[in-house]
Image (cartoon, rainbow, N blue to C red):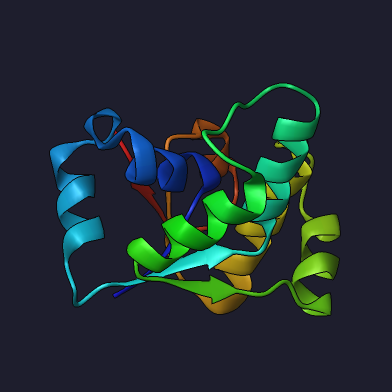
Length: 130
């Protein structure tokens, strides 16, 4: 199964797996599942670090590249269609990074693993992270 990871899920996966439910950890460790990570995730992380909302043990680029290599994620680039779809979404959720992830999930027809309840307001399949 393909599974798109919300930024918070990936951060917990890489640094605080106990925050995830046992079911979520099992899905993330299952080699049969393809884990997709949006290009919005490193972008969001970099912005949060820049404004002081997130602290990392190293520079953002090093954090992303080392964790991406060890979590067997498949990068999901942001296309023009993803960007346009994110702008078309109803304003149930105002976070632009989450809106891109929701748009990608809709266009790519993949579920999103998230703990963000606002995702449920959209026509997108979700998998609870906790």
